[in-house]
Image (cartoon, rainbow, N blue to C red; front, side):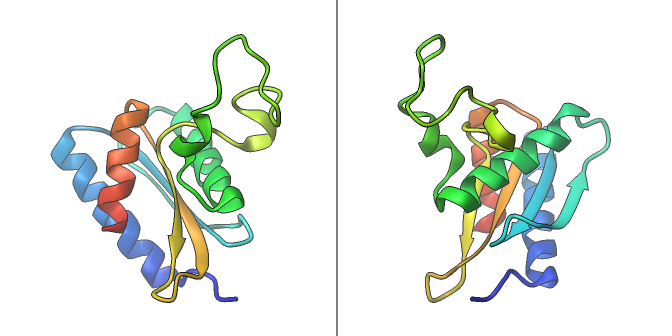
Length: 132
């Protein structure tokens, strides 16, 4: 199975950074390969320091479950135990908007993108713009 190429990862981040600038959001972008290893990382000036870890955790959730990180939070409710997770940021996974799995032209998983810096909805929109 192939992993995302570094040039492809850089293009994804560049599109995301452009979308973030247009939206007025200082964001962090992390691209992982299909094994959840960091391929490239970019933190915009004045992005929150916490966003660095959050972007990686969103990408990790997306690559491990092969779905957008926001889709994983639907059954979660604050204060209610989740069947598979002790808490939202369990084991380095973050189950809120901003993570997207990345697939090649044949539909094969090659990695994931994680974005953090705005609200979960803003992060999810930036991730979608980055992979468009």
